[in-house]
Image: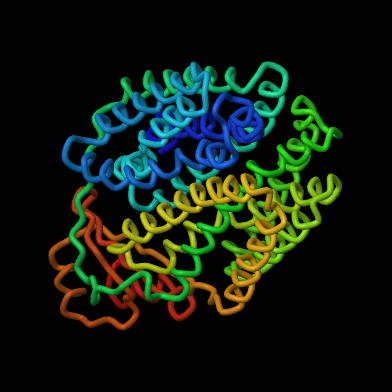
Length: 436
């Protein structure tokens, strides 16, 4: 499995590392360019997310028609062109153009689909966890490298590094084997439902939007506040980013233990939403010391829920709804990134940092109260059985109450049964079906 997903994982790693590298200092860099305004700086920060949100669905549809490899290559070429334009930019408008093109190469959903295509059904969850881990590592490396290299050599050099990373991703993509398309036959779909009408799912979509929106705001506001105070230079900000990032990474372990292994994600979401409220309260104080503390609190709040959101969404939907539900999650996240950056720019343009902080306090408090209504997802399990016509007929005609959902993976010739791990055991289900 590792060999199959390594090249796809590398492409995603290079892309996210390039996007994250500029985050620590991009607001300072963009604000110094000709024709810059706080609003346009906000567009620079969040603009890539807007085009990413707009293009991810077309990329997914086109990859179904023309193949995953072709769309991955096309998307990474767009990302490379955008990165080169951003590197060469001498004014704010050219930089915005580069950032929009970076986001237009929306290959994330295509790579996720490709991983699902090449990884056997029973190992897919582990594969996606590895992908999530590589993105988290990319974020951690970017916080260190971006703040140090950008501080001493300039943010434009970071865009050059991003261009090199994009080129490396293209080299890896060229060498990809043809990715087979996996076909499913869903044998028990249930009635169609409105995913936005599910309160738990809507909460998670809102959480994704607020979390990524707060990320844009933090990287927009905090570097400017600290450097404008005269107490910190951009060359010194790495001294804050590195320990804050380490603290955030350390918080991920307990979050995964409580959220995944113990099946109590609500506790993690409550702590995170409370810390986001605290971040907003600290920003409202508008002093150097509280701004630094807000940075540390933010990194913990962000990393607590980063490994859980998509996993929780997957647990709350049927297999036939998973692609749509994760598409909603990503779209909310991208729009949150865009709204956070442009919204913060708009407030800064009018000198209203305190009003921005009060808005964040209100939104985060609503989020905290809403978290109290969140229900921990029921623990589910999957059983993977070799397909046979007799077994399929038995399941279709048996009306077994222990089957929550079942479907056939035609490409791998498997019958997959989803069941409640609280009510039933795998051995019990196998006995009733008469299979080993």
